[in-house]
Image 1 (cartoon, rainbow, N blue to C red):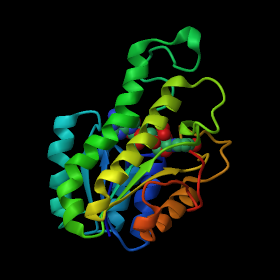
Image 2: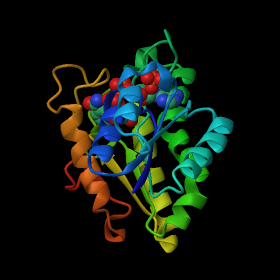
Image 3: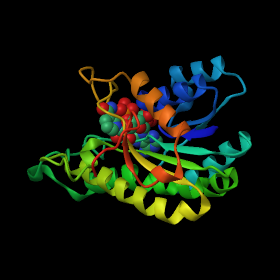
Image 4: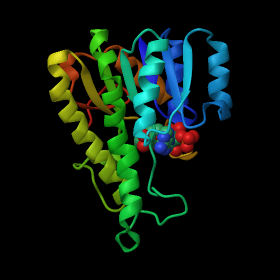
Length: 237
Ligand SMILES: NC(=O)c1ccc[n+]([C@@H]2O[C@H](COP(=O)([O-])OP(=O)(O)OC[C@H]3O[C@@H](n4cnc5c(N)ncnc54)[C@H](OP(=O)(O)O)[C@@H]3O)[C@@H](O)[C@H]2O)c1
């Protein structure tokens, strides 16, 4: 498979790139600063000819429209888009967090919506001609249990709202792309040891990424529109 991954410069995104490469696939790895990621340049060096990298801030729609098709063309097409780039609780650098109602401000909320919910759709739009040409296109939106309305508790407004919106986007995309044979799922990666998840998280990035790569390989149209766990089991909406 030819797999485009966003946010591949660190954390789960890098682990996903490694997992797909280890499974024999080709990867278009995008990051805001790919050259600044030793992990990503190391991966590219270790898998010559199977990795292309590109600089991409997913909230820059013009860059998405330019970079995604260009990287796909370098791989001769795209079969999978994995939207992994994401941000948590502070949408604006040094701005207020969106954790509690008494510190809520619109701009940090909207910034999280932009990166976690709007950007994945814009990335899919840019990749769509290549996904359609693939004959077995797949979209994997990295969501979170915090986007689950069934499991919602309190707080973390910006992040939870943006991931719930991503879940809805997943359902809508699945419906719209079904006639073209493109499967679309939202995936909860679990609590993962990354900068976002912290060191006490229960899963290594490698464990989560390997599970997500496996479920992507086996993804069928019957699963399209579902919210899945990293291990391929179902997750409540
Ligand atoms: N870790 C967990 O426990 C956990 C749990 C549930 C869901 N998730 C989801 O899993 C995904 C990966 O998270 P992670 O744990 O790897 O988080 P992380 O360690 O905080 O890394 C976030 C990644 O997203 C990228 N990113 C953020 N804003 C971006 C933008 N505007 N354009 C391009 N890339 C951007 C970052 O790139 P830079 O290096 O350029 O900042 C980085 O690669 C996210 O969607 C997250 O919401 C994580």
